[in-house]
Image 1: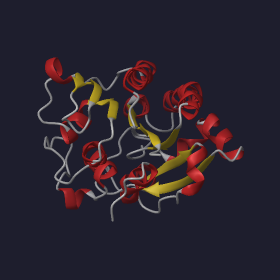
Image 2: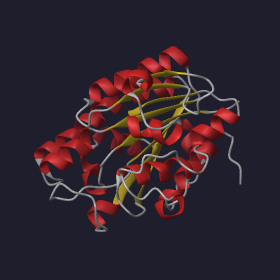
Image 3: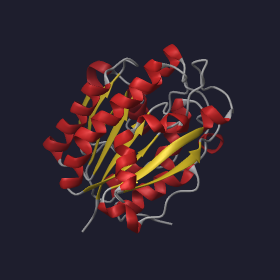
Image 4: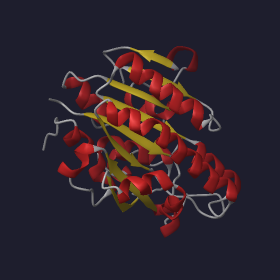
Length: 257
């Protein structure tokens, strides 16, 4: 039986902020999750790293090395491979994910709500505001899950990144944004586990105390990674950020070497 996966991308979550995620730590201590730290590929910018997470190649190989590079990912993403394998996909995510996987440029009036089995992301609720509340984002994701029962649900929140840019990583606002994401995971992960999903939780890049991540410092490159749910023990933890896409495909039993 094909497994199901929830892929949670907590944008801008630095490894140094993992202590703010008490529920995920509780899962680790209960033997229900594995944890490691990874080094983000360079440059540590969101759009290039979204492509890396979704196709498994570093930015210098995808050619997506700037945030303003509005183009489809040149290599098949996990969404493409799932669609070709006959699996159903859904994403509650920032609109750059749609531009990388479905088509570009994004037209909010046309593309915000996506329902098209021919697209790599079959069902999508895409937002355009960096300040889009994480609470609403997780509700969007749960609506997609209940409505379409996808084989993979992609959940991409921007609250931590937004707080980091506004106040820096060494701020109460940044830590509170991480705590809020943890509280939302505490609400929804048990439901997803009960529905038969494993969960992969990570970040694209970290965050500096000065509110930026556009550099090669350890603080902006080190990110946390969790694999949670009953299925995680049968999978190996990744050693590099470029291995996450393949790990997601292995979790779905459609990995191709």
